[in-house]
Image 1 (cartoon, helix red, strand yellow):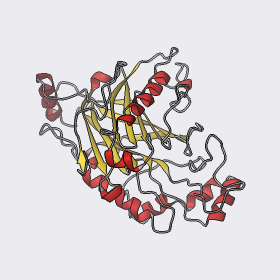
Image 2 (tube, helix red, strand yellow; image 1 turned 45 degrees about the horizontal axis):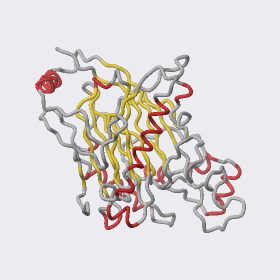
Image 3 (cartoon, one colour; image 1 turned 135 degrees about the vertical axis):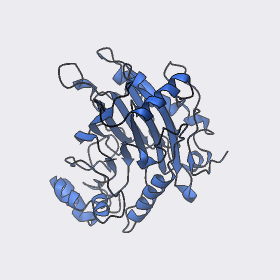
Image 4 (cartoon, one colour; image 1 turned 120 degrees about the vertical axis):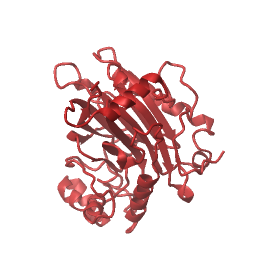
Length: 380
């Protein structure tokens, strides 16, 4: 079956139910119950005069894995910052939001048939979730994490994990997928978004893969993809008190993924600056920064200071950029702008923004850590 709809927010798995105990894409927090109705009454009855707040730590990660399935021995603990969560330092994140691009090769069969019809791709998200679970719930972990929701659209995959003692505070989970790739509607490019409420505060996380291309003017296609995602992402309301339906209706919005923005510099100049490690000079010519400044895309959004090298494009299983030593000049130049995390709205403070050195694909994974203010849900 061809999925040509602009946006979907179905509540069923896009691949078979897991047999190892953690949930797949089936959403586990629907709100049609007496308890939920009572909660919604509380949400609507409170005013801002006696509002109490909690602080949650949120980990956001993104990685374009280049169509490579995770090997059995893949260790994600460094990327997920688990090695530092030993109880001696800062507290571990309450919520992990992990977005992947190209979890399957972007071949015509995968794009046109989609993940739900291409049975060979069913196991790929489970393999990634297995690797994530092994890292988060390792033998030395003091906290246990559960998978709240996972959702795949062709190569785009988002998965959310929460501490077990946080799970009861999360409600009204929903998903929305927007395809804007082939023919303007297929899922080789686009987004998968997850919405949920923590206590009274709404969160939305957008995992996207925008249009590629390194020619002058190709940034317009990326801008257009971003605009399509903002306008077509839509979540079910289910209640008059759940006001957040569109993407920017939510109180805290984080956009992550391979945005594919490049560097406004000649090929030879870019490679020279990479060799010299002149990251700040490269950043001055970053397409996304330029488009933001000109007001052409992501108006009102924020990004933390980038202090890491370009995340694309690397030779497989190495730390060498394509073409730096002997490759042909027409190969893709290093790009600081591909893999990014940006946010919209108040109540989010970024404390960390960096890349890690996993060499599985031609991209390097990135991570951002936020503290998020959350309005508490309590009786008046």
